[in-house]
Amino acid sequence: MSALLIVILVVLGLLLVIVLFIWATYNALVTMRQRVREAWSGIDVQLKRRASLIPNLVETVKGYAAHERDLFENVTKARAALVSASNPAQAAQADNVLTGALKSLFAVAEAYPDLKANQNFLQLQGELSDTESKVAYSRQFYNTNVRDYNTKIETFPSVLIARQFGFAPSDYFEAEATAREDVRVSFSR
Image 1 (cartoon, rainbow, N blue to C red):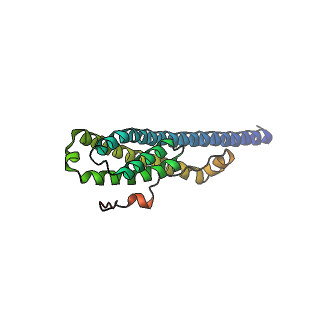
Image 2: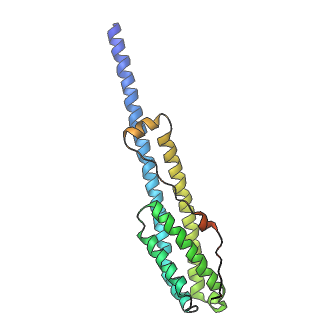
Image 3: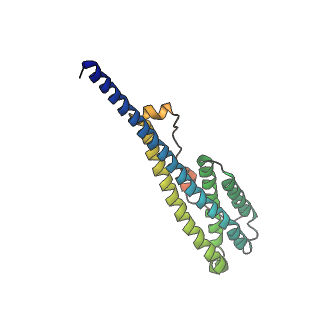
C-alpha cells in the first residue's frame, strides 16, 4: 500500500469515528430531553389529579365551616392557577401556593370534630394524601432526570454537541421556602 492510501484511510477512519461520536451523543441528548419531558408529564398528571380532588374536598368542608369564606376562595384561586400553569416553573409556584392553602384547609378541618369523622371527608383526605405522595415521587423523578440531562449537556465532550444543536438546560421543580413552613391558623377574628 502506498503512503497516500494509508493517510486517506486513517483520515476516513477518524472522520467516521467523529461522525459516530456526534451521532451517538446527539441521540443520547435527545433521549435525555425526552425523559425530562416524560417526567414533567408525570408531575402534570398528578397535579391535575390533585386539582380535581380539591373542589370535592372544599365542598365537603364548606358544609361544616361556612364562615371560612376567604379560605375557600384562596384554595379555589390556587387550584385555578395550578390548572392553568403552562411550564414547570409556573406549576411549581402554583403548587407551592396550593400546598399552603390546603394546609390551612386541613387546619380548619381540625376544628370540626364532626367533619373529621365524615366518611366523605376521610375518603377525600385519603385520596389527597395518596396523590401528595405521588406528586412528591414525580417531582423527585423529574428532578433526577433534569439533573442527568443538565449534567450531560454541560460536561465535556457532549457540551460541544449540545451547544451546536441548541440543547438548553431544564429547570428543576423546586418548593419555595414558604411552602416548607408550617401553617399558622388563628380562629380569632
